[in-house]
Length: 443
Image (cartoon, rainbow, N blue to C red; front, top):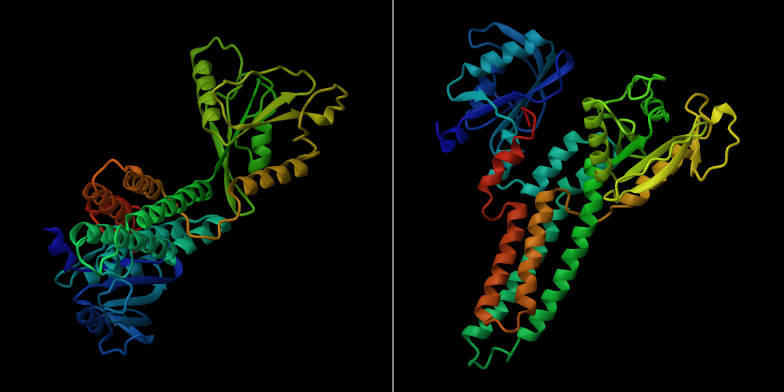
């Protein structure tokens, strides 16, 4: 079956949460929607009005009673005729309805993201809005929700469309100078103002990319690594932060061999904290591997918490390649330690002493690193890569005075194409499957 044939099928899926549940929502979209809907409810229905109906099999047996809604295209989520069945969320009830839907000609279960993909294909949204919806579904913190909602509202699309229009206008002026330079109604040498405009646009996009790095941190989370010598209290701190026994605590050195990670929600910002193997000269092969992984993770972190037992401090030297900010943490404060030391924080996971202060500082660090994101920002590496390619083309067009105008106009055309690929207006077939496969079934 070709993609074109599949697109003309009527698709359906459970669009609500895991069963059993109080209410289940089954969504259906495609050319057979009205026929299927009226067959199951046994009557016609007014568009966009909820009707309480009995849902029946084609042989007349009742399935359940619930609400039915009809959304005729093109004014629907997918741009096609759509309908929803709201029924009780029992496993057997929903399975019976899905079984009945599957029995209609040219009706099949939807693939992951197929409803949203049809909305994109029918011009109801662009790729940035589709990606924003995927992030909104996956959002686990308040910060992620706000960022995803901003993208899903179309703010990115408006900005990139505006930039494309500026590029198209600039290119038109250059081509007008090339083609009609001998005409009286074309101003002589407009190229100077065009290059100035392109340099301004390049600066705007560069600032936009910088803001995207902070957005990526909010979307993907900040990464904090707990490091230190064996028995420095690393696993105890991880357990405290997690609020449960994640790591095994033992007086035996080298207990932690692999990476253990927990996710925190600090003021709406996702923070991943990783416990690592104790850093020392190891003799066993397994422990050496654990230490190598610890150093590798620290090199990728945004913050490293370097713990030392204040009773028996053991100095640990981290790899010079680590560029993350490093906090020194003195542990086991409950043992009444009077020993001097240059620790930024002195904590006790046993009594909780100074841990509130430490957590507050950690949240401030996360907020300062990400900052306030109020404008449209690139939220995915795909966006940033295409924006960087756009900048490269603009830079060549604006600054290569030794190149003919025809070639510089071509660079401007390529720059506008890169912007168009972000929103899906230009040449994006190869990435559609990747983007929409991230959705759950029924969206």
